[in-house]
Amino acid sequence: MTDTIENVEDILLDSLEILGSTRVEDPGCIRYGNLTLTVAPKEGKANTLLADHLFSPALLLAERIERGLVEVAGRSIIELGAGCALPSLLAATLPEPPRLVVVTDYPDDIILGNLRSTVERNEQYFCPPCVVHCQGYEWGKDSSSLLRLSEGPDVSRGYDVVIMSDLLHFHSSHDALIHSLSSLLAKTPSARVYVAAGKYTTPSVCQNFLDIGSRIGLVWDGDSGTSGQGDETEDKGDIEATSPWLGTRVIAGIDATQLGIRKGMCRWWVGRWNIPDIKDVADGITVI
Image 1 (tube, helix red, strand yellow):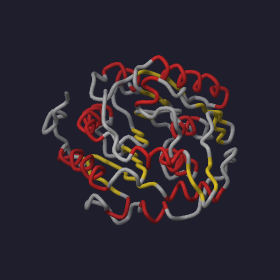
Image 2 (cartoon, rainbow, N blue to C red):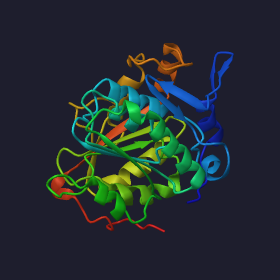
Image 3 (cartoon, rainbow, N blue to C red):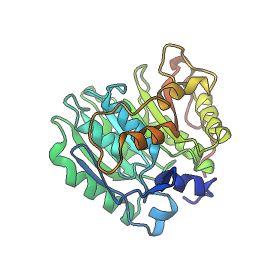
Image 4 (cartoon, rainbow, N blue to C red):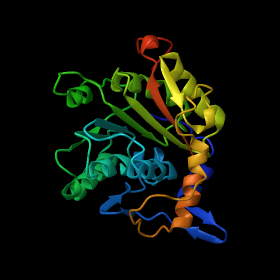
């Protein structure tokens, strides 16, 4: 997968964030509570696909998981384009964890090698009965191996939760992302996809992704109704994003002020199926 990334300097400034006159370097090793996470070396596909950075949307989603705002207990979770997989691996450490976590990223030796090492390094902190798998996956491609992993006790397939952290800036990959999402997100009323993007990803680019999702039967809540389809009882993204950092786990090297600023650089949405309107994955989507 190749793509031209819009506003790449703004994207990278999120990881090399400037707070007043102080530049905060994103370390190669991130400690979030007990978790020790690493980003891929800055070479090859890891550099091209920005897998060599920890971006603010991952922190926002992790904070929401830590606060119990994402229902994970006993559920199956898959993260696409996981990078260092902070949100999904954090979920695996909760006292009431998911039954299954699958972290995926582009099938490249450097990217997957780092992700597998991260999973192995932290497996002592995963709470039983949670099982964590790591697998290479390119968006838009056959997802049958991932669906086999998701198979539940009732032999149903599909994931209760899909996590997509900071993936929308790959504008020309939106069709492929939606193709994968339609395949992987369980066709149940309780299934949810959690999408977060940095504000460096322009509203029009985000809206393009939301519109494609709406065409296959997804309803989007959150971010103060940016999609135009929000349920007013749901959390509102801008309200949360401008509030102080509310996580309780210690994050080494980043203080609460910096975390609050990084949180404020994010937008987020929660997607769910409008069950009567679910369409076949191929409807209106062309995947190259």
